[in-house]
Length: 182
Image (tube, rainbow, N blue to C red):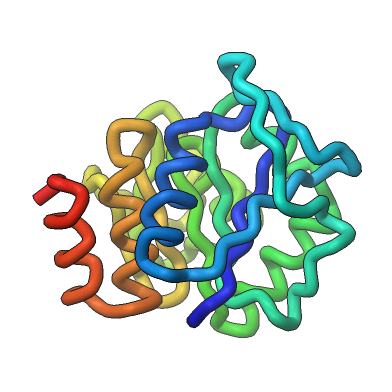
């Protein structure tokens, strides 16, 4: 079983974040919802507060297999401003470990040069921020160790794409049927 950390910053998009948590937990994956601050409660862009499993300083990145960055505003900007998290994103990409980002959050990967020569997608208004990417208008895109999703309406395919990367296409298809998506 893989260990996935999904990072929450004030102003995250709740559907993008919690759909991934739900799908991966249903599949038996170990998920940690992580606040990038020292506060365990994080408010979404719509004022929905969720209690996290951990704060950033409690994450053992050596034991983490996947980093997930949900979108939302100002959540995406707050994630990108967290230098300790950005150092880990860079290290994960360099090591070939999986990094997944949805909606506005793929712009972070673009700004950091991680999408050069990769297929990627994002919220349409953020596509210009995917520096060097072969931009696709698909709900979710897997290219090597990078997974991107378009937005809130693509939260399920994005979550299933992460599951596919972790457990294979058959497991993702089975989950899609189980949740009456496919």
